[in-house]
Image 1 (tube, one colour):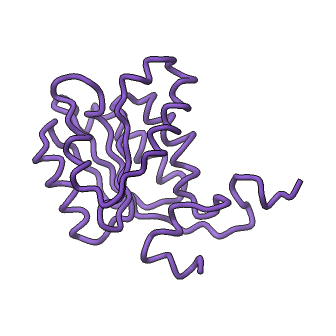
Image 2 (image 1 turned 30 degrees about the vertical axis):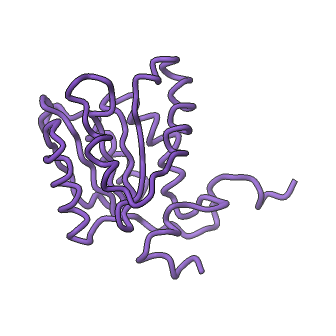
Image 3 (image 1 turned 60 degrees about the vertical axis):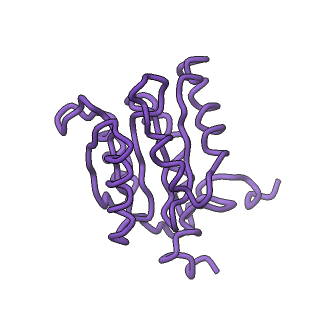
Length: 183
């Protein structure tokens, strides 16, 4: 079998770090109790990416949009990861906050996340409205608020999708400041 056709990390490739911001959406978490946002920040820096920013906002549509728009306007982030607000509780509003901002929605992310999550939490994965899309040229991925869901999302999906060495392709190739490196 031709190894170039097998999906995975090309160990001979060059890693290009992305600038990633982490947004925790919660009415109750603080910097000390934000285990999900902390896990994402730890995982992305351990992988070699840059933690561009980290914040916690309440479960309010305006608060979520304001923070996302501010990071995008600053032009210093390639990717935003959110954690929290993707369930069915009345205050879970993250998808409602971000979907109207999407230039393009990434339907496949939800499908892949749910496949991964099915293996760890079973049909409870149906209680997540994980979603992703592109706002201007910034990719945004919305993960549930549980630390386990963030672990699954990073370790089994995003660690690969955001690694420039992943073949046959990665999201790094679509980041405007890196695009010329893949032409």
